[in-house]
Amino acid sequence: MGPQHPSTHGVLRLVIELDGEIIDKITPHIGYLHRGIEKLSEHRTYHQALPLTDRMDYLAPMSNNLGYVLAVEKLLGVEVPERAKTVRVITAELTRLKSHLVWLACHALDIGAMTVFLYCFREREKVMEIYEKLSGARMTSNYYRVGGLSADVYAGFEKDVQEIIDTFPGFFDTYEGLLTKNTIWLQRTVGNGVISAEDAIDAGITGPALRGSGVDWDLRRDNPYSGYEKYSFKVPVGEKCDTFDRYKVRLVEMREAVKIISQALNDLKPGPVLADLPQVCYPPKENVYNSIEGLIHHFKIASEGFAAPEGEVYQGVENPKGELGYYLVSDGSNKPYRMRVRPPSFVNLSAIEKMAKGSMIADLVAVIGTLDIVLGEIDR
Amino acid sequence: MVDMAENNRAVIKLRERFAADIVEVKEFRGEVTVTVTKNNIVEICNYLKTALGYNLLTDVTAVDYLGKSPRFQVVYNMYSIPSKDRLRVKAQVEEADATIDSVSGVWSSANWLERETYDLFGITFAGHPDLRRILMTDDWVGHPLRKDYPLQGPDREPYKGRLS
Image (cartoon, rainbow over all chains, first blue to last red; front, side):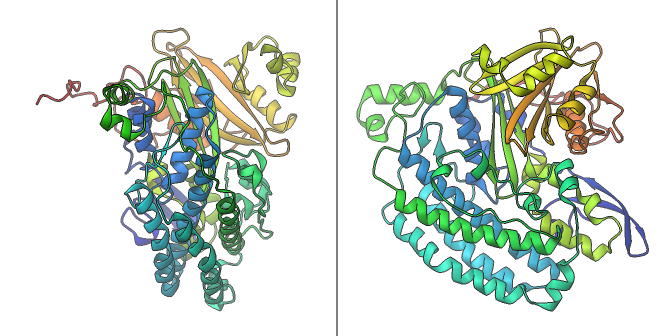
């Protein structure tokens, strides 16, 4: 199956050994999208390595950027202004919505519900428009910077986000109306891809797929970063450890994301969006264009970057797919000596045989959908 | 700073049981790193999982310190879901004997992560059930994340900057 099969969500190849229609063994073949992002980052300054990160999980670029900038800031010991933190939370949760909408769209399409696919992509477009206005790009955002944000939000950002807060819960009701009690949906998802909590932890599964197995653990709540401790939200967990429970968990997560965005938007106070650290951050554009000192400053940061203290840090963030971690090793120079990305989809995919063994081949399609993998991040 | 690392629950226990294996304990930005020799890595990991609750193996990777001895460090980032804390264990691996015992029997998540480390660093994991390349093709020569592997690939001239 694959690498060009429509339900493999990218270039994934599965060599399946079958006993009739029953799956006996699955051997995944990955690496078709391997671009050597970890190797490339060793040859770039810390600022230059940032655009590489949003090309991994291209369905959730800002969450990828967030993990990276937090890791570098931890390495440097830099404190980020409040407004930048809040905007990061809003945009990271918008990213969660965007990523989960693609998950639901493709998952439903794989199992035969095409209407949901079209609805989800319609709503995703609203988030994409905000992305485009913020960063100029719909997918490769590169909006955050080490020390804050590349620019403050555009005029009208609050209004656009408010529209999402007002309208999205109604859309979620529509999806649930189409799926939650739909007999075909239930037959395809209930009892499919069961993995117990113990097995899921052992297999390293993280994120909604782990919570679907009843493990009450969310990095945003348990090891908060970027000011998540200020917001109250529920962490949904499943009971039956199957595809249907993971579906319910992700839907509740989308509703909770809207609540976080709403709280963060109320919390958004005027202020700087970039730390006052000339040796690390880019200067404001008006200085670059209007003064020779500003131009020199920009040139120094763009060409040399900044030197990070010797040491090593790990920063994990709750990506829509699971725990995305950056492990940075610095030798004191201006480039990461080693940048390791802990890919959630990669580890989640490794459990596919455990989840699908003994089921029918058609159910494997539902398991791939429920794992919510993205190959750009698996292969890096 | 050193005291904070020494007061870490896991470090105290490890010092009691595996005193001979511990090379260094370090604390940086609130994160504790324990460097050990590779001899008892499976016992250490097993103990950390069963007795100290580090039930989630987040990541296995390696760092190539070319020119230093030992050349490689295999890095285990682990997490305890009950107590919500992280621990990093690093095992030293010499270039001449780039082998370490596999911990895939302790956490099954190590299976693919060790395969990736094998693929990109050329470190062999003894006792691994399925040690094949995972990201690169099976017939690939070399290990791309080693520091002496050129960025452009093995058969190409190094990039010399723009000519225009």
